[in-house]
Length: 191
Image 1 (cartoon, rainbow, N blue to C red):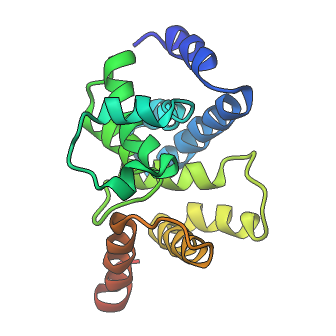
Image 2 (spheres, rainbow, N blue to C red):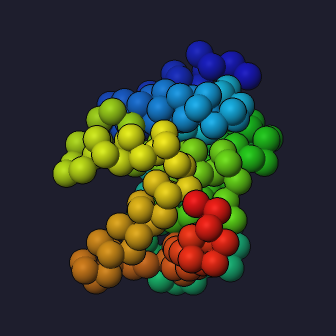
């Protein structure tokens, strides 16, 4: 894996702001991977590439997804569509073949039920990387290093609340993910 090539290509593809966010996510993902005994190199790479498709047009994203059966509503929302498009772009442009890295890119913005450790790490790292500044971020960063699953549930719940309040598209995977992690807390006490 040629990290120089990946960094150079990402800098060409993304705005400076988005590239810096990607670097921050990669660094945060590596720290979370260390904390939770996951592969730090995979976490760094997935974090670096998680938004690789963010600057593409809606048409380019649709082309990457190649009619995979997504609804028209899904395909009209770049904010959600960039994640699976990023998975495809990472595979084609950066020759990533590791399924866990690819899936972490796919699910980083809307989640899913029963996420892998790396998927959780990338989802949370994206929300707490150093350039993110909002009310309560310090507490959420602390929570992420104390209990990754609880942090994940907080971010999923917040995402649903925000999207609902703003009357924006809410992908069903996010709703199912919240139910799954709510059930874990209520019924199994695993979190």
